[in-house]
Length: 127
Image (tube, rainbow, N blue to C red):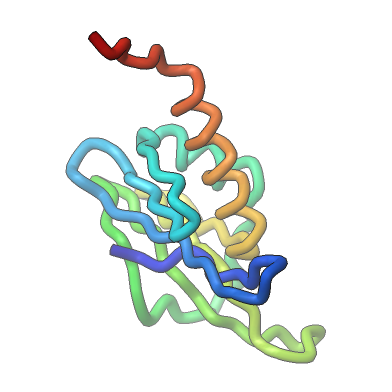
């Protein structure tokens, strides 16, 4: 299980979003109660849309989630232009350069897509 993001809600409490891979899909669990699953292809599309090539020389140490041939890393990095370190998600694709994105931004996109897909599924009727 990989921590994707931790944020402060309007009431001051913290909420975290986690990802887990089951061999087929990436399951997203939010402490706010939202859960769902995305295909690895969907995660790849989101990361390709929002991610930028990771600067050469930045080590990918720390937590990672294997998603078939892909790897999703959590990276805390302190860029020269930032006052303090930020959390990034880094998507490592086979034979291509890793893509990095600010964790809060990409997690919000993944959470939105997950909830959107969950809302479009037909609901089971209760008998």
